Amino acid sequence: MGQIFLVVPDAPIENVAQLDANRQLGETGIRLGILDNTKGNADHLLNMIIEGVKKEFKVDSVVMTRKAASSRPATDAILDQLAKEADLVVSAMAD
Amino acid sequence: MSKLTTMLQTPGALIACDDDPEAVFELMCSKGWSDGLPVIPPTAERVERMLAYCDRDLDKPVLNIPPRFGAATPIRIAANAVMAGCKPEYFPLVLLALEALADEQYNLYGTQATTHPCTPMLIFNGPAAKEAGINAGQNAMGNYFRANAVIGRAVRLALVNIGAAIPGTGDMATTGTPAKFTFCVAENEEQSPWDPLHVELGFPRESSAVTVIAAESPHNVNDHESLNAEGILTMVAGTMTITGSNNPYYAGQPLLAFGPEHAATVANDGMSKADVRQWLFKHATLPLSRFSRETIERRFRRKLAAQYADAALDTPVRMCAKPEDLLIIVTGGAGKHSQYVPTFGNTRAATRVLKRADGTLAKSLHDFKRN
Image (tube, rainbow over all chains, first blue to last red; front, side, top):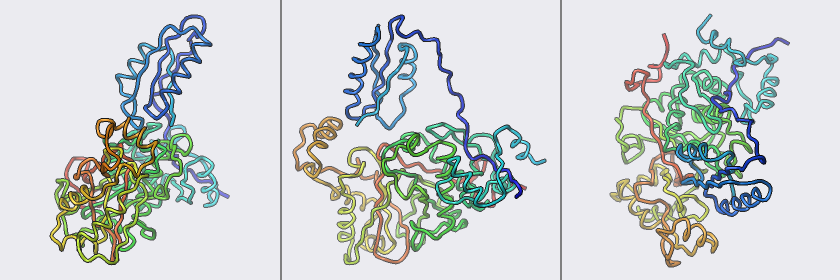
């Protein structure tokens, strides 16, 4: 049987920021970022996660952010704030 | 060597497969590139024929499709259009629909990723729809007609393959909808008693346009008995007033697709589209008490507190925020049925007019043919 060549119909992921693997979580205090997607109970779930992280790690600060609506992306302002003020970010989907 | 062939020299642009229809289908399924139905093999020759009706730069993205934000170049879109079964002359309409979906107000990111069962409904107006053979008559929202089936399918395949709206990872729809295979219609302009949608939106009558909405499956309005506008609209209002739709909560734009006979009955009573909207805004309401106690407390009283914090249980809940938000078209053939199409909610319809790359209105699909 002969072979044919097909044009690949998908697209690669582009412009993905490389994660900085040099975090030293646990040795210094964590600046914890929280992104609430506004779904029902997301705030409760995130508060539980914050308390859980605080039990396991030294947390210096917690920055809370909230999207305008769950079905819209976070704004650049929110993402810039999290990039500036947090070492890691937890986002939650709940309902 | 053609320009396309040169572009396809990029590593990863092509994939080898046995020259056998079943092998192609197996490969497409194994890679997650099919919608579950067989596809036409997107060979370079077929993609090149598809691109004969594209006057854009072949490797310049028309949009980036979320959630992956993959670059939707004409080449990649054409591969999906070949797979869907498109004729080359359909390609300008596939591109046009994708351009409309890129409009920020449509909220492609949210509609691609949501748990809600929405999908782009493509509504074509103007001469290009007729030229392509998009059915606006009998069974307009159903099967059988190639242009409706494959133009909608090409858009869906592009959304999945380029945007990675893959069920369970990128597309989190709880149940989805059969309309995710394809949902493409034309307006039955000849049998509409009113201006067609694109004219109503301010575009020239002679132009061709697509309007995209983030649609649920259509809900039927069966009314064989009513003899006047009030009767027909009473039945429409009854179909619109459902507690499970997103539209009572969000500022979306649901669609009312009149069958021509219902439209004629309503128009013969002297009602314009604006009159229909006002009537339905007033009458298509549910008392707050029809929703569950938890929905009233958590959704209406908390999330929509400005409107419902202290509202009485007999407060009317409307199906859209203002009368103008209800979109109206006429489509389909003979018979006493119309369709109500709820939407995602946090989305607005987007309309694009068919233009050549130089910005001039296209008079025909053949305006796009490369020499």
